[in-house]
Length: 427
Image 1 (spheres, helix red, strand yellow):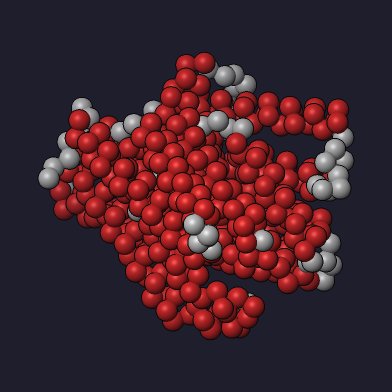
Image 2 (cartoon, rainbow, N blue to C red):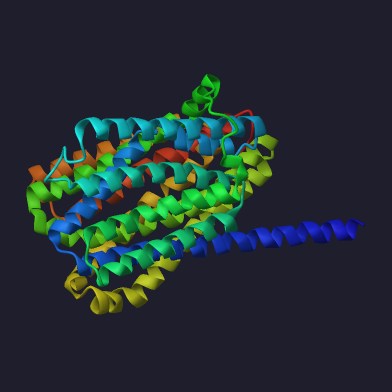
């Protein structure tokens, strides 16, 4: 009997490891498909239409700002596995999304979709707002799947959604219409939302009711990581507007390949965090410091493996891929190697973030975001005053600022975990 139980436990462990790596591979495939979709648009459309596509992405991001920490807070709490709380969170998130949708629709009816024309086309505004709502809803719903460790379901839905989106994007090769491109982009989060609602009953609302206590709990752990993420987004704005103001729009065009490349240092580490964070939370709740240390070490090693693997792939494939698909960016190879260093430096912040998420001490994540933004902005200003601002020096400042934030998160994370009543981190 004990042999069968041990075999079952071992088999379950093997399946869990397999699902982790399948999840990572499929998420990387989703990232590559989304990257390929952008390449299609760059080949098909002129600068004016590409500008509308970029504006749609900005609108989606702006709609995401309205969640004020509900998405991150719901993910952190959902991973704790409290059934009643999770049911209340599902009701809260459904109602919040519905209220936001009704509010947006009401404003559009009052002011009309052409309010920002001709800068923002009516179709860009409408599809962008729809995509933003779908993105916000799909984010928290998919987070619930990941927190429940249903990794294969999450990645399967993601692959199906991006495949449909990519096929729709390919239609622009035959019919180069802006509306098709915009709809193709909005399809991905919309299909993820539908897929999760179909395969995960837990995210479906049981009643149209918002519990104030649940709102307080979610925001208490979610608003500070949200503010920290706003600081990172502000860093992007400082970076890009500094390039435009000092170096000119053409320099930003040259930097566009760097922006796309750095996206890989967001998506894969996020997938790794999604895998390890729920396990860390469960260890904290169980008071098992040995398991917590094991999860933390594994997370660090996986980030290191991703960094090494990324470097090897760059050394082998970067120049051939650029020569084949984007020959106009071949001269940007040195920039991309600098971007690799900047991406790894920023990724290092996840080591401390995992610890702070697990014990729900998220205020320090906000402080780290402010430190990163403040040091980057100060460095950019000093470079500008010294007449040394360039694309290369901007990336150097990204490295320095990211390392400052990473050091803060790691040191403070160790201290907070050590002082926590839930777990004790050994030497």
